[in-house]
Length: 244
Image 1 (tube, rainbow, N blue to C red):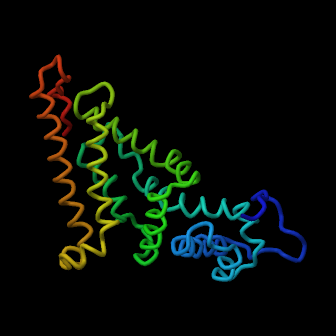
Image 2 (spheres, one colour):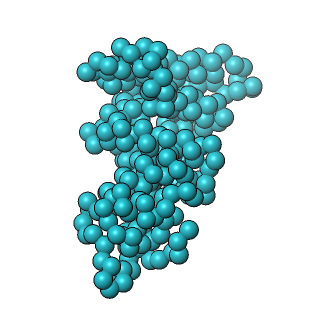
Image 3 (cartoon, one colour):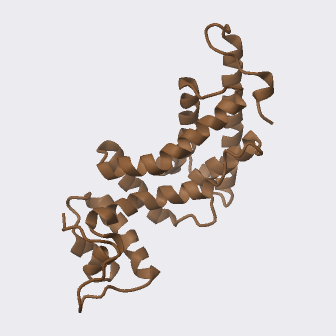
């Protein structure tokens, strides 16, 4: 790993990096592809800079060091999804409105969604991290996904009439997110098994509409399950907490 440097420090004389957002964006894009293919240790800063068309001082200038660039490649796509979700847990929203924001963002239906080829590289990079999580990945998850998960669990608890989430609410949250995530992670397999599902011009909207129905069914099942359990074994959901 190269020696860390301050992201805001100027490069040495005669080695000014390419300026402007385009240089930074090219670094992130090409670094994502190379880290996804080789992993953090095997990828070299020189290789990344050559692919991006910038000199080696640019990584130090924009990200501090190789580790800072790697963290940015992990953080950027997750942060964009979280941003696209907006205030999905706003109590003023119905359950369906909340899920449309959340699941639509995961599916990549936001207006600023990246191209599919790049998304494949992002997923490949994140799959590497899921198999062998690094400290950077854990930090990114805690910074971005953990707060969103807590917000989702709070929303689900509210619709079930609970004061606070319990383990079953966490299970429900995992199930809801997994439905949308699978359309990202298993996209190539889905194309082989049922090409028509993802080939139509409105495939994304159709998938989202179905997922909203499934999400409602899962919530209703959890509410009914709790009502069927004796009060002294597991608090039942309030009929008024089922949402709109």
